[in-house]
Structures are given as C-alpha cells and as structure tokens.
Length: 108
Image 1 (tube, helix red, strand yellow):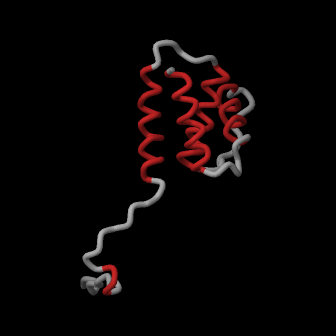
Image 2 (tube, one colour):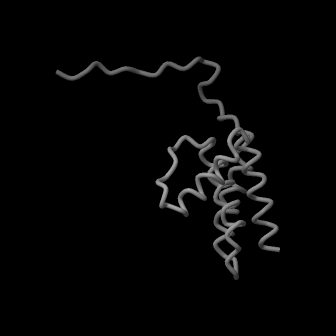
Image 3 (tube, one colour):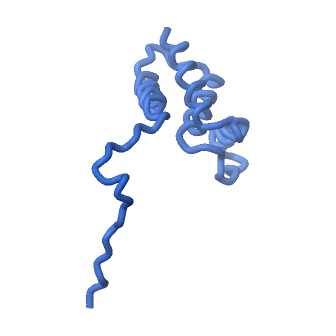
C-alpha cells in the first residue's frame, strides 16, 4: 500500500507571485564573502583576533552557543567556547556586521 498523495494548498494570493526578498539576504551574502576573503590574508592574525573572528562567525551563522563545555585539557576548544559564549544574546545580524567590519579592517 502506498500513502495517499497530498497536495500543498497555497492561498490564491501567493500563487505565481515572486517570493519577497529577505532583508538579510544582502547581509548574509556580504558575511559569506567576508568569510571567503579572510582566507586571502597575507599574514596570520594573532590568537586574540582569530578567537574574535571565530566567535563572531559562529554567532552570525549559528546564533547563541548551545554546546557543552569542552574537556579540561582541550585548551583550544575551551578558548573557542568561551569566546563564543561571550557573544550569547548578540543578535545574529549584529554579529555578522561586526565580523564583516573586522574582516575589512584586517584586509585594509
């Protein structure tokens, strides 16, 4: 036996209308471009800057931290966890803007 086919029913007002552009689309594109551009740096940033970049990227792409603290001897993981945790409650859009600004600053 096969399950009965269901059909999505859309209000007539939405049929054949263009999808509205999400206001964050341009910001998201700029954020993703900044993530690509940062790979082109001639010199590696210091560890504090790398942690800021990591935390801002994670906050901008995933939102608030929901992971458990890494193990005691995972020093790098713990540093990343703490940097990201400091940005909890910062809106994703704000984190994206900060990330883009930091990348532009580093590339200048």
